[in-house]
Amino acid sequence: MSTVERLKLDAFGRQVSNALSSTRDISLLAQIDETIEAVADEVVKFQSLALMTDHFIEVLQKAAIPDVSGLAELQLMFARSIEIVASYHQNQIIKRQSAIEDKRLTNEDGIVDAYDTLIQQVAQFHNNLSSLSWLLGEHLAEADTTMPETFTSADALFKAIGV
Image (tube, rainbow, N blue to C red; front, top):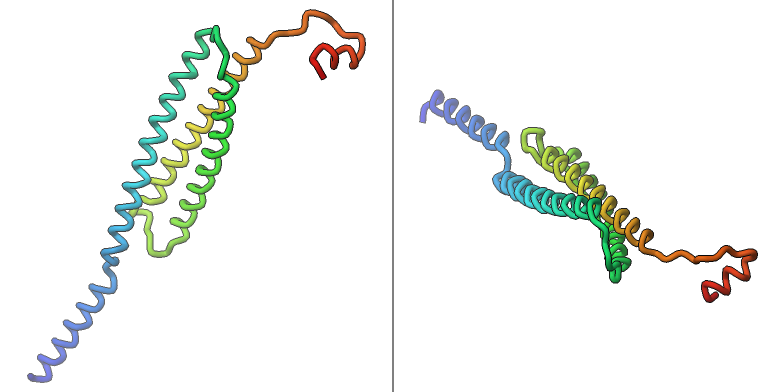
């Protein structure tokens, strides 16, 4: 091999090395795709839940509920769900921040944008669920019976409510 051929071979070696070091790891690209797909699935799930919640909000706003039995338990279940959704929302914010801080990721990867969309959709569902729970509470309050008399003392009130 001549000296010129050796120099060309060395130059070619540097080109190969530079080309490979500047390309991103295939497994990282696969993880990015998997993450975006998983986040997109979550967005669709929360969009569906928000739409269903909207539907029931409209129904409750337009109609009276003649039988409120079991409604208190349903409202309690929604109240617990609100807490779970709030925690999930906070976890997604943390994941988004992790994606921002990950030096391997770029803006073009779309992970931060995907999390932004998910966070907005989860917040919308949380707000809708809160409204639904509040409306159920209103229906419960309206159905609650009131004491027909006035009370002159706390003892009289306690006696009337069985305390």
